[in-house]
Image (cartoon, rainbow, N blue to C red):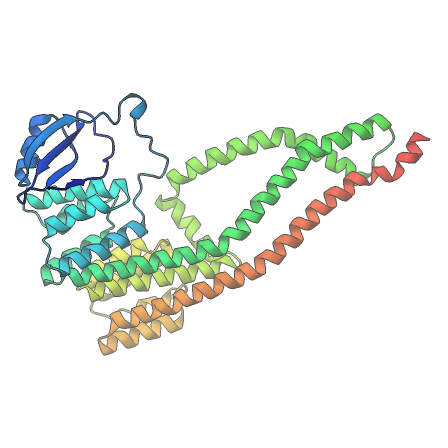
Length: 421
């Protein structure tokens, strides 16, 4: 008895298109069911026949209408590094096992958890079926596949080692995900404690202090100066809290829109490196990302000038990007790769010397990966040290603030009996 294969649900159709549920039999007679997006039933039938399937039934999907409409949460339509890492690893396994690109792309589009990535891979598969190269098809989706990935796959196609390039891509993305996870896990606890403490202070000013203020005013008498200041802050917070919430929302929306502009980055990125405590961490993260990406691209056979241009923009810091531009000019004029880096303070002498040795010995890609591994360990150690330093300081500062508020509220109570008498 033939078995049926169920394809995952697809995102909402584009304007002018509808989702159609179909059932068809493949060449082996197995029943296949799924959903396709098309303008009409005839378009679905043509696509199924083009895929070697014999249509059994096709009808418009009821999903997306009325109470069955899909709800997409904010951020659910994004493709993250973790999705790309998993896709690259699976893609490499299938290509090295002898599966065709079209078959591998079809499997990936069906089993990936990201709806956006699934939809894009299905589109890429259709473009590859028309005869264009995989890298060209990927390059059409710059919002999903970064330039680093596109250029490495192009080099793998030209050199005939696409499976090896995909493995290197997977390792690169996995290392980036691991690095981000380390920083995020180390900073989560201090941030959560800080937010809770701020909410506690605001809550006391808005709800607790007014009760004490009314009690003190009913009793009469002059309040101590600390209590007067606390009452004044409580009154001011009634107006400052709504303004602060609105300002926070508006500021976050504006920041998302302008944070990637050159004028903003030219000011903010250098300041990140000069911040006390966190500046060193930012520098190490940028160096790790720069050396890892450059080493991976050089190992994959991407031309060095093209690699420098891509890794400079992918470093996440305009200071590193400027250094990459200087290196490009040096290489174009026939000079060394590591020489110009010595003129930029963000690159320590150790990095410059190791790159110079790698350049002289012809093992620059291996040396770059060693530098990246070193800074990955440095980032982990720095985040642990920062966490150990921040936690006691935060507890001491916030404890002092809340303790001072409590003392200021209870100071008038010491004279309550005198006021009553």
